[in-house]
Image (cartoon, rainbow, N blue to C red; front, side, top):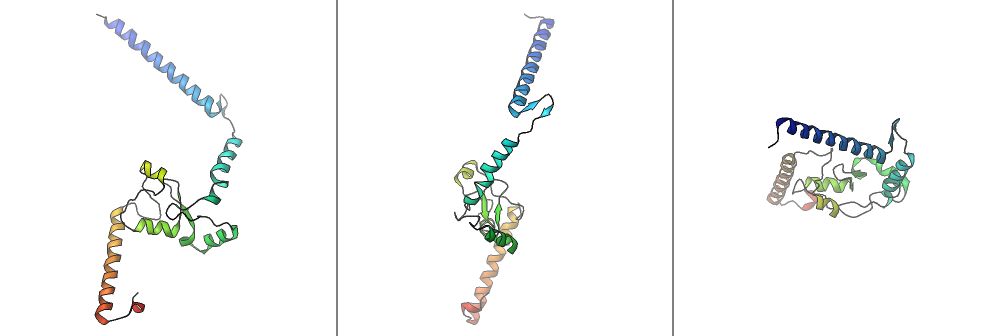
Length: 172
């Protein structure tokens, strides 16, 4: 049997070993991240490479996650016109998964059941990333209620048009 002093000595040695391992891990992390004793080092090339790979070369070829259509037009003047025209035509990025959508397609995707859908892209679908965006409520019950009210209104309009024998051209 060990004495209390031996157990305390062993626990202290293990604690010192854990602290040493933590310091080594932190030093290795700082070395890998480019930190020195003076603080973080500038990494302009890393930043430029990241921006180039993930935005400059990727965005012109980006396709909508719903329809597969190009999100950004080939002509920059057309993109400027779409952005200036308004919200419904502009490209939009979904913060939860990082995929790009055309706003009108994302609107239809978010406002139709089932609510709380997973992103249609295979990589996001495998991770189970639910499409959320600040322009739409995250409370799916609100979306469901709005959709049900819209469908009820459509049914009422159809019933009234059938009752009065109105053609489809008069139905809103």
